[in-house]
Length: 195
Image: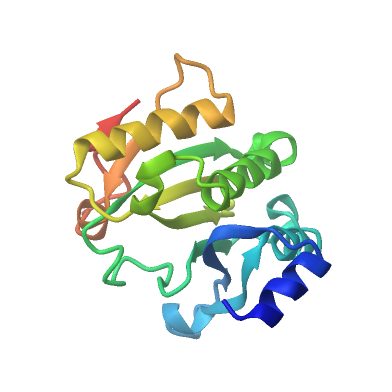
């Protein structure tokens, strides 16, 4: 890091987050290809830039149905086909529509803070990002990991994520491999792991 950047960082008291992240926005437009509906909003690598971004976008509860936010490590796109994602999977939390105005925004913020704050300790290296889907029937929040076959890492991340959100012990959340989700023949994907 050059001396000017260090001095500017000290002068403006900017705190670096452990990785550079990108925030993406998806809005479903059936007249376009899926990839054409996905836009990178911005990248950030300081806590101050994260909070500036967070406070200047609509909260998920205010998005229209068919919209997503995704936050992924710089260099990883929020799609199964990305080389960092294709062997991975996701811890998925599904929320009924009536939770949209009570818990959705809180869970999304906690998810983002887990990611940028390295909330999974040394297992954070296996985190690719997170996606929130706003849909008419209910909403989904997922943390994506890079390797669906690494049982120890995936299970630790799931337990820590559930704990970070303050979810009750009796509530079960599932992990789905992207390969299984991509080849499903109906709307249900079998969970590879549960916590």
